[in-house]
Image 1 (cartoon, rainbow, N blue to C red):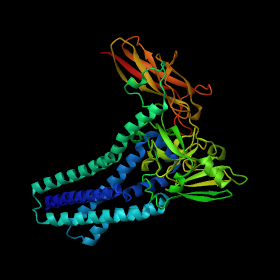
Image 2 (cartoon, rainbow, N blue to C red):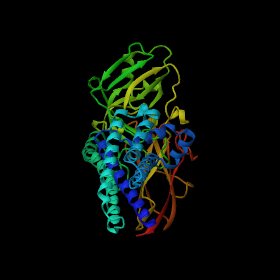
Image 3 (cartoon, rainbow, N blue to C red):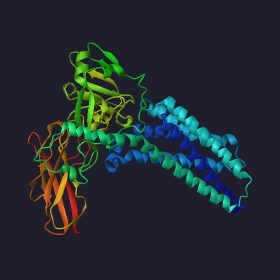
Image 4 (cartoon, rainbow, N blue to C red):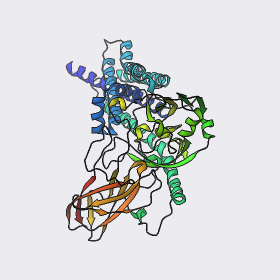
Length: 512
């Protein structure tokens, strides 16, 4: 009797896990089609509730993995709750109403948490629809599976093996769907970017006879980042799905003539093209959270001039569709290279990068380059944005940084010269020199530059090196910005003003 009860319990857990996987799969597919993925609402509520003294160490420890692990944790909780509902479902003493309530409970809780704690960043109508259909799919699947297995002998080993296989297949399908969906969304963009990047570089950069053969350096960062490869870091698990027919851009606050633009009206205004390197303030030394793209949009100063600032105007607050807000000083907003952009690499800005429009601010880390822009508000005080309230820098000026891309940690060496190469950036200050050390920063050699794509982009550099011997060599690189200021050697973590320090790499040189 005990063995039979144990078998029933295991069967119920498997049934619940399978039904929950199906519900999540339905929810994910709907999310892929633009109906907000409901479990992400719970994750977003957690982000909003997490205090800065906890969030900041987690971000520094996990970097871009922080949100991914949160998403995984929420899904695991859904699966665990579903398994428990399945366990209850095989108990003949429990009513169907209780089982349905247990199965639907996590979905209802998700909507409630999102509504209460993340209302500004969650599409509540879409989340409610997604959660309702996900819960319905899970409850229906659990009912069908329970009835389908009720007539089988409890001791049937083949049934248990079949359930295990089906559960594993369902989980695999769910994971593969996520990966496949993401791949489909980026494949067309990636293929289009190849032609665009080549065309842009041909039109905008004229190689000189002295230019080193950077194009033949395998592993070196491209001059222009394909859109599909450009980093994204957000405070939101849910990317806003903007209805362009309803979207408007509002210019308001301490202005003489507030106004509102539709998307079509914005596109009709005089536009500029700008090559611009974005970097994340949470990027580590040698990290990958930076990218260079060609942006097209309207200078923010033109919009502010049309509105006319009132006396005492101090900050310009940039408000996102999802409730995120940050600010820049009025003087920075009026710089000609501060742009409200609607094209990225010649195409409409993708959702991940801020569709329909985002702001680009020279010499400022990405967190203040607000995405999914809906309002520009001039204020007469020092506005503290989302990350400022959590202790991050208010000015967020880009620090001079250099990165070693090649040769990598292991080098097969045939006795000839090898190439050391990478990128350097310093916001709008530009880069005037990169130096490389092959002996742990005891001595320095000046690297060769490739022409920068523009005044706001990174520069690629390279230098030839002949190792003295096989074994481990400590490489280091440092840069000097366009004002003549050498970057500091002091190594500092990203919080609160961005990382500093030289990029260093131990290279194991092996004969080969």
